[in-house]
Length: 162
Image (tube, rainbow, N blue to C red):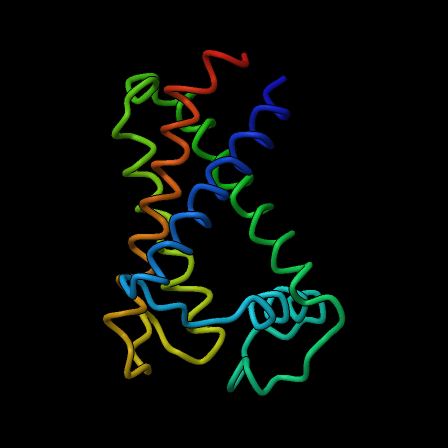
């Protein structure tokens, strides 16, 4: 039962993040710094043991990049949500607290800042980019919204479904 909940809640939180990102990008609040194809390419190259790219846009493309972007993005959301539920088991004081998943979501911003961005040659915290502040803001908003999605699941959907 917990695995099913992790899959559903992770997909839900990721979908909330994606929907909000679409709206925020259209309103120029966030700055998409990597395309879906490039993100899928980055993910696929991990399996080829290529962890760093001079320029992900000029790295040779691979088959089904958008598909793998979607799969990897939602799998990562499920794994991160699973980690949150594990934290709830170990730290019962955060269970059923609206703020805890939001703070957790914000904390997951360490992954793009210290893994994705350096691996696509933008540096830690996008230090090599002329758009650094926009990229940092984008990451912070997206990951906080992801945490908000987990919170929505826990407060609204979890009681109805499980």
